[in-house]
Length: 120
Image (cartoon, rainbow, N blue to C red):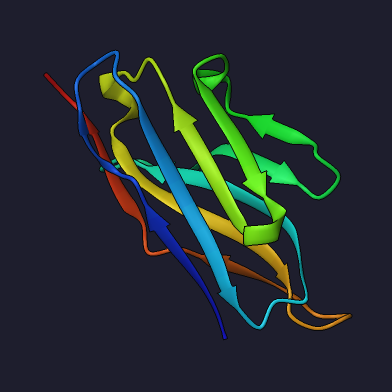
């Protein structure tokens, strides 16, 4: 069994910062990629940022220059530093990981989601 546990969401004023964390635990042979998605009410879930084994990073255009994704391989943890937050960043943020559970088997996993609300 593999679990993704997120933390760090909350309420912040426009222009503020938050840091999200997501730790993977369980029967992990390796991790190919970890990232963050978000879903606002009435909207589809969208990619925010992802970091792939080897270090390649992708960001949504809407967060470039404001958000930074990083990963601690030793801890199987991915972070999302969110600066200069805007009301339109308000959403439930979900951690996603592409995890090798055996030498040849890979599965995708989702965290439970953490609410980020940007409001004055």
